Image 1 (tube, helix red, strand yellow):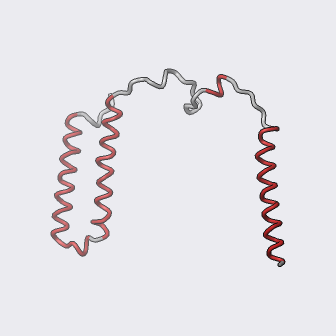
Image 2 (cartoon, one colour; image 1 turned 30 degrees about the horizontal axis):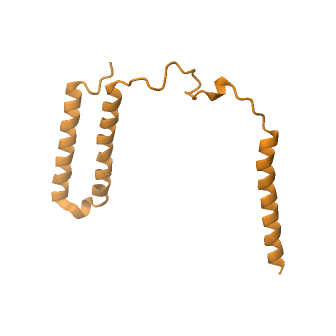
Image 3 (cartoon, one colour; image 1 turned 30 degrees about the vertical axis):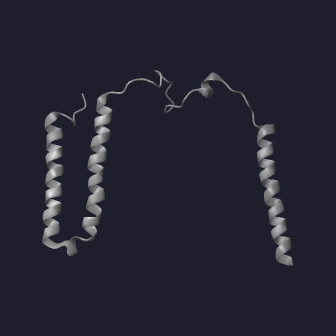
Length: 117
């Protein structure tokens, strides 16, 4: 019987607290919409151009390179967990995997994909 009264009391207190905070917000919060408040926030810097501005292809190339080399970690973690059980064949396979990644990195480096001009 006592716990039922405590539960009812906590329910009433919670409902009153939430009700007061939500209704108090509408009645007490200042509402002064201005053009500056309606603009998109860009790190405290005023917006210089429209949001439909074209991006350089370099941004997309960097993103694709990040994804490709980030997937390396996804394949490297299971190998690191099971490297003792995989033995020499697992070591050869991860060596081939790193060789392919190294070739890709060398290709990007040679083509100038890592340079930001």
